[in-house]
Length: 192
Image (cartoon, rainbow, N blue to C red; front, side):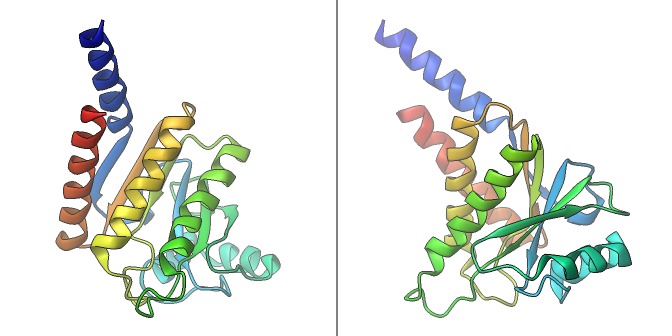
């Protein structure tokens, strides 16, 4: 019986991991229900992935974002995808890294939880995340990736409707960090 339970657990972990994909790609090219924008609090565009998403989505996105009244750190808001292949954009404001003593890890985890809550509310089944806060906000990549994978596994384990989560990586360092963290999480799932 114990052997059968272990196999069942292994199958569950494998099934969960099959719903995660790590890509080195331009997030604006992904045809998913929603891509996540690592936005600033104004939601009016900026540099990095935020600027790329605004440029690719077109001026209609800026108009809709103006109507939202900004967004607080750790929270998220939903807009249409406009000219993107993605139907929607989840805008979330990650924390600026200031050494880790200003609740940065909790705020980053809240970004993921807020995005997942909106996805559940709107029936979004496929999501793509950038490495939130890892650009100009200077969050340490390894720590940010650990938080991202943890929050994603929590959601996948409780939300069977979520079919796929993609981590869209902008460079090899981030891509490799996600690969290591997902592999480590898979080993841990198999052990439990």
